[in-house]
Image (cartoon, rainbow, N blue to C red; front, side):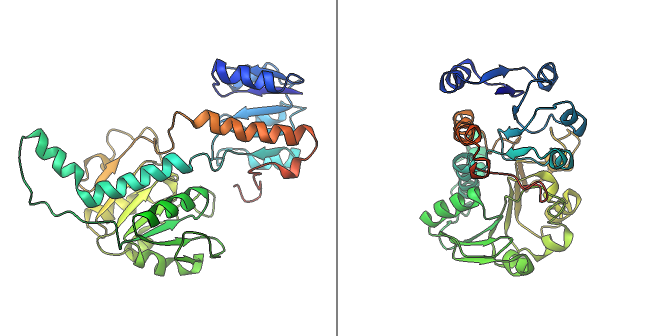
Length: 317
C-alpha cells in the first residue's frame, strides 16, 4: 500500500515506520499540496486533520483510511468522507498525560497564588499576607469525561478533591464520585469549584457554555478550557469575568488563533492565557505513531473495525 503523510515527521520516525512495514511505500511530504502530487496512488493518509477539504477527498481515487495524528477532527469534511466510505481514526488518548498535568498545574497555581508571589519577587517584596488555599476538599467538575478527563480525575483524587463529571450517558466511571447526564448541567455547574472543559467541538457542543450556563456556575469558581475555543461563547465569558460571576478563567484555546492582540481577554485581570500548549509534549509524535502502527497492522489484515479510535462520521467524533 502507498502511505502518505502531510504532517511533518522526523527522520527517526520515518525510518522506524519504513523498517516496521517494508511491504508498504511511505511518502513523507511537506504538506497536503505535495501529497496531491501522488493523488492517484495514495491509499492511506497521515494528517493533523486541518488540511483537507471535500474537494481534496475527491482527488484521491484510492484513499481508504485517514489516520489523524491529533485528537481534534472537527475540520474534516465528514460528508465527503462518509460518501466515499473512508475510514477515519484519530489519536485520542495521547494527550492524557500533558493535559492532565497542565490542568492540575493551573489548579495548584490558582489556590497557592504563585502569580502573586512571583510578582512580589520581581519587586523584592516580602509579603506573607496573600491568602492561599488548598485543593483538598474542593470539587472539580469535568465537562467531557473521556480519556483526558479520566486522567484528570485520577490525579485530582490524589489531591483529595471531589470529582464530578458530565457526559453524554451519565454512566459511572472510575475515579469519579458522581457523573451527571446532559439534563443535569445546572446541578453539575453549581457544585463545581473548578470547571474543566474538555468537550470535542461538534455542532452540538458549539457555544455549549453561554451566558445562561456561566450564570449557573458557583460564585468564586474557576473555568479552565483545554477543549476548543468555540465550545464557550467568548462574549459571554468576557462579561462573566468583568462582572465577576466567576473568580477566574484559564484559557488555552480560542475561537481565533493566534488570539488577536486587540482581544479583551489579554487585559482582563482574572483571565490567564496560554497559546494552545496544554497538549504539547516531547513524546507527542511517538505516542501518535504508536496508535497508527497498531492500526496499520489491523488495517492490512482487513480488521478495520478493530482499529483504535474510529471516528463516527455522523457524530463528528
